[in-house]
Length: 198
Image 1 (spheres, rainbow, N blue to C red):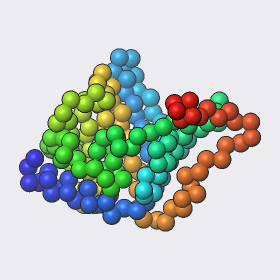
Image 2 (image 1 turned 135 degrees about the horizontal axis):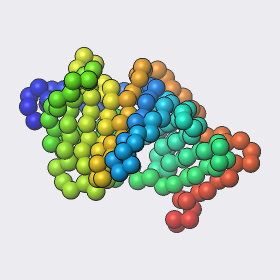
Image 3 (image 1 turned 90 degrees about the vertical axis):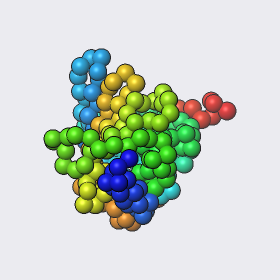
């Protein structure tokens, strides 16, 4: 890691360590390598320490994902279902947990500066130091002025790419814990896989 890259990574980690909560719009582009097509989704993402995260998908269909502690909730209003599954956050990669102010990227990745003509910020390329079955590479586009992540791309083992651009990020705005509670309408079927796993 060059001194320039290390300085930016340290600033980026410090930014998220100081962030108590954040809210942003997002645009997600999932490029399926095998099918040579891209699926685009948009919505909002909300986060509050420690470990509360809500992804509200608006397009192309409404869905809500909430990560709360060691559980993840998925509400699909069209299907009228609410799924609950266990999530071991201790096994999450640093490529995710650094957003929570946890996990050190340099402990898990070789980090270098990448070339990117269309990037608004500095492109950091993260290659796993150990065999990683979940993904091949992570790329982070970072604003050099603020050290915020503007865009993150995870390259799957098959070469498919999941890119999320964060839009109008606002930090430490005082988000209430109640914002992460799901209140599905009456008649919603609840599938609690955490009980079945016990």
